[in-house]
Length: 79
Image (cartoon, rainbow, N blue to C red; front, side, top):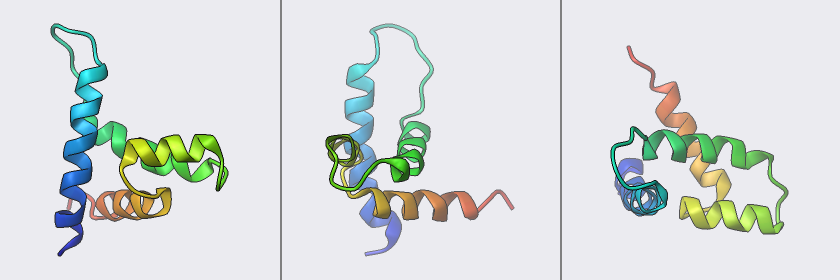
């Protein structure tokens, strides 16, 4: 599987949870943007902490893998 194939189910799961947590009605929100941000800032959490476990549960994988996916996507750039 490519990285994108592995990432797709994680993002679909996160998007479902993300939209379930938003208020009903019109809103503008980006589950992908939120997932990427959580993946990158999650690296600041302490290994083995409850906070890290909650972040990894939300991401659907460990923080290091999520941050690697996020960094690869960002470094691909727009060009």
